Image (tube, rainbow, N blue to C red):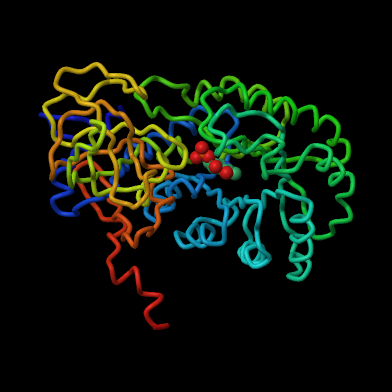
Amino acid sequence: MSNFFHYKDNELFCEDTSVKEIIQKENTPAYIYSKNSILKHFTEIKDAFAEAKPLICFSVKSNSNLTILKILSDAGAGFDVVSGGELYRALKIGVHPDKIVFAGVGKTTEEIKYALKNNIFMFNVESKAELENINTVAGDLSKKARVALRINPDIDARTHAKTTTGKKENKFGIDFETSEQIINNIDSYKNIDLRGIHVHLGSPIYDPEPYVLALKKVDEFLQKVRKLHKIEYLNIGGGYCISYTGESVKRPEDFARDILPITKKLGARLIMEPGRFIVGNAGILVSRVTYSKASIGGKKHVICDAAMNDLIRPSLYDAFHRIWPVCTSVPRPEIELPNQKPQTNGNLEIVDIVGPVCESSDVLAKGRWFPVVKAGDLIAVFSSGAYGFTMSSNYNSRPRACEILVDGGTVSTIRRRETYEDLIAIEKEYL
Ligand SMILES: Cc1ncc(COP(=O)(O)O)c(C=O)c1O
């Protein structure tokens, strides 16, 4: 467990602040982030790759709260965006546009215009058709668009099928053959300034090997095409893993050790797009138990007030998040693994922890060994800082949770809880 979330006298703290006290004021469900954890992770990845002096473009999709983007921007980060909305957020916090890269398979003409008008650093281009469109739009605006070709290297990132992006059957990127044709023909794209190559394999990736395999293929490719065109930037994407179970996983320095010798050989300037590594373990989702229910077949359901609309990863990816009561005399185990009884002193029972949404897939944890809890108790869903709030929705007309930032003993609301009025605000005028 990151020591930014720790138990003291049977009670969970975020940095120096009692989670129970935050919730007394803010209520549940609530996302709580540790500012110093975010900064520590940013520094860790920056230091591990320091030798290459990379531009670290935080992946806005993992957590797009403005205050968090501002913290990272102040620490020197750039941003990886995948939509006009994410670009709007990045620009709003005042980051210099030459620190913004824009990926995504379906950038619309409007989004391309918006990005060009704001002079972003680079588009990560995902198809020939998109390159042609960017060329046309840039011409209309009398601009030259800086681009990197996103290569699909057909490498298995060995992660969940739904978050694998670098295999040939995935919709992302351009194959080597087409990329070579584009580069051969680059002079015909009058309004394109081809500056780099981009590769993003998927997320989370638990081993450097897929990066190494992909970069070796990129190396071979560059040997061929470099004679035709100088490639100045190499963007190696994101995907760096975090521990969801408490077990130790590879650290940025392990990735750097294997990746840097190859990128050094390639001689291009490095760009990285980490998201999950920076914010994943810097956030928790706190929820309150509404009911405990013994269901048919002897199964016990703990029904809480956070649901799949607040945190969809367990429903969508069967993702495993550790969960533990906020106040408990049962020590939180060091490690928890799916379907295994963890080592701890105290009474545990097997439960499904579920939300109130009308879907059987509305599950936060299935078959989990858990301390006995009762209605009113608070529980914390750990490792929820990435792809938590950003993937939340209003399904079942549930107002979205608030987001709270803790810095030592200081607590700030960085997004207020939505209200019922917010739910209808942009509909009611059409009644
Ligand atoms: C193009 C691109 N870059 C970076 C990321 C960030 O990945 P992660 O949060 O695992 O670092 C993603 C996420 O899917 C992505 O699609």
